[in-house]
Each structure stands twice: as structure tokens, then as C-alpha cells.
Length: 145
Figure 1 (spheres, rainbow, N blue to C red):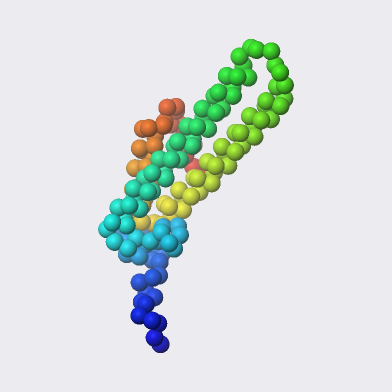
Figure 2 (figure 1 turned 90 degrees about the vertical axis):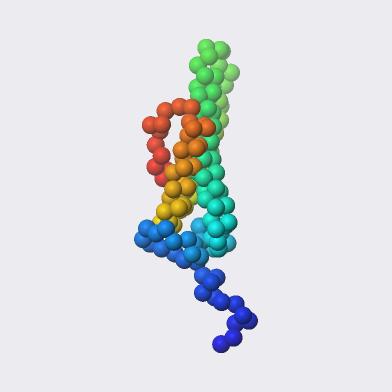
């Protein structure tokens, strides 16, 4: 059956459920994010490093938000409307938490390509992100959520 010259096998994503180093037709999370050659592999690995490093940025911004809020609450200044301030702060912390959970699951999906190159890029991104933004303890959880 003619298909207009398109080879559908070249358009299919290669999905693995076992560890591999093969990047032939590897799709990363979306079918549009496909590895088609060396250049797309290198750009994708750099993108994964940047995405994963960005997670550390979000974590650090969350810690700073919480620290700033705690300092404001315990300055010893007369309380204006501490209940409203606490609710606003809790809303902000919840928003940061939601972003972190979404982001961490996205990184988990990157890791679940079961591709060694992508897994290494995730680890390198975490390393780079922590070097840049990890100004506090590394003991805070790095689990999927």
C-alpha cells in the first residue's frame, strides 16, 4: 500500500522498558521530542541537564520564600493581621510545593526513558543545579515528590 514515500517505521518512537544506551528514534516524553541524530542527542542532553538543574533552582526559591516568611513572622514587630499573613504564606508554600511535585514527576519521566544517556544527563543536571543553587542542606528529599 503506497504511503506517499513516508517510511512509518522511521517515524515511530523507540520505547524501551529495559536499560539501554541506544538512541535510535528515542522519544523523550513527547513524540515531538525525538532523537534523530548526534546533534539532536547533544541538544536534548543539554536540555535535560538544564531542566534538572532548574529543579534545584525551584527548590532553592522555595527554601528562600519559607525562610523570608519565617523571618518576617518572628521579627518581634507588632502583628498586623497575622492570620491573614499565615494564610498567604501557606498559599505561597503550597504553590511552591505543587510546582516541585510536578517538576519532580517530569524528571522521573525523563529517567523512565531507561536510556543511559538521559539518566546521566539527569544526574549531571542535579549536580550542576546543586552547585549553583544548593545553598542549604542536601538532606532535603529528592524523591519524586
